[in-house]
Image (cartoon, rainbow, N blue to C red):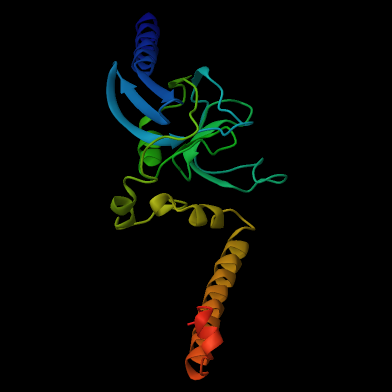
Length: 223
């Protein structure tokens, strides 16, 4: 019995030791997140954190929960429904790390959005209980392309649900229940407007070419 208890204590201490040597560091100033193990950087990725009025909290936290296909009960207000794939819960009041659209500025409602590819990797690597350090102050924008690995993940053989390939904001919005139809309608309306404008311009140019110009019109520059 004593031997069994000693073995269990050793296993628990070993698990805690292994977990304590994993750490996620979120740098708000650089809009990047890092995965450390035994003090060594394993990988990093770009993020987008809370915008003004919805700042991401700073301090020490832990991964409270993991949910690969999480759906928000809060956003979009008032009934929720936003997909937050590869979710790592940070606080008990709605802040989490998850896959989402990552522009080059803070844009979320407090969550830490991770770019495609990085979110999946972080989800697989982190454990429930992994320490999270959030530090720094978010800038107005960061000098970087909107998506550095869009092409690599767009060419992958199997797309993951809610992957937002290329970090396209329209794809991100269209993944939210109730938004897909409105996004498609807006795209269709814009396309029709451009076609109508092009047609009217071509018609006007044709009419002008067919109608002889008076000397007065030519002096006014209507050519």
